[in-house]
Image (cartoon, rainbow, N blue to C red; front, side, top):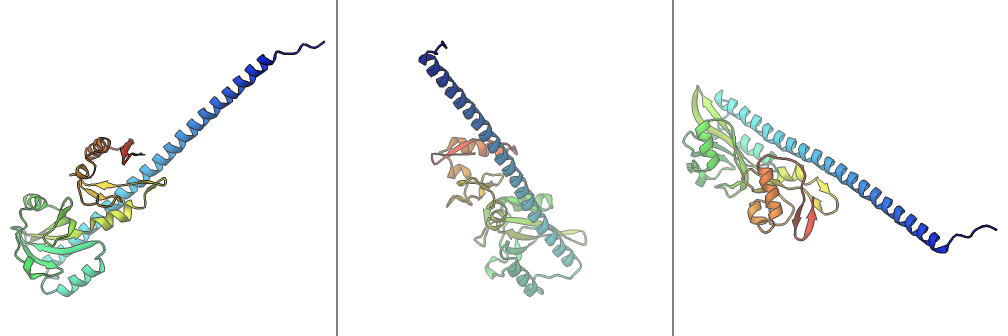
Length: 253
């Protein structure tokens, strides 16, 4: 007569089997989730590098345009007063990228500007930090985000002008940093709620989709969130990598 197994043994066996399957399922889930997050992070890191290269290329392209203007002035083919119509047309063509074109003399005074406004002619901007650096080095210089005398929140790029070997100041453009950053950073989407943001070397947020953040310091915007400040400090040191921070009681990576 066949021996009937104890029902308690069957219960223990099935309970153990279910527990083992649940454990394996959770392990597979954790591994799959980790792999998915790693792939997402890798993809976003690639997007971030591409955004950096895009912004660098934009600044470099404008530097080359200004160098062309410098060469035209050196050879007498460009004069800000005589060729004002040409410069105004050029400015209107690229108004989404630049706020103004300025000719500054060797002492840091504005001698012409497009769009033209008489009240700015002769204005001394030598006290601006990036202008001080430019006048000292006499080399191409790009500023952090600042409020210009024309009341634009922008990044300024100065290229030196030498005529017959004599330093005569610069030709500069104000770059519309919001539009440039938006073009390369806004497209980076992380899940349903994640986003990318961009800061300058002094901690100013050049681009951030959170209303009211762009143009202000990350230390002002996120002073109540120490994990964000810690991450920002590492970013300002030139480091890259992955981290987790908490903002508005939501966790972002």
